[in-house]
Length: 158
Image (cartoon, rainbow, N blue to C red; front, side):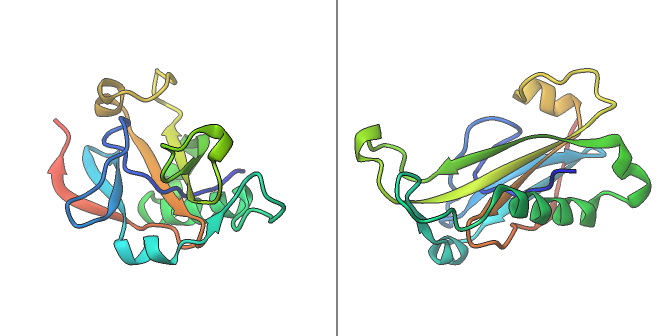
């Protein structure tokens, strides 16, 4: 099965943003609890630069990113519940995407891996409304190969 971890700031399935401390994070929901996967400024500095149009191979393969994300996912979801989850999709994203295509050049890249509880009645693209009702995990995996950990917050979904 596919496994991965990603890097970006998604707030309950919406667009990416930055924390005030210079970090990036993404939120997930499990059993009514909100989890955050946060990329520190230090981890961002360690991320390699990659040019997808150059000859150099990708620093972290999609398969390895999925393995890292799955390991992080398994730290939170008990073994007896994992069969209810599936890998929904994996995204490859770049920082500094403001440059036009023809001047793309090298950038820092990361993956976002999305796991969904297959018992959910909806498998549409995540939106804040869907995410609030259904359990999902969005995991950040930077190209440095160190998956961002999931940390439970004190906030809960209503």
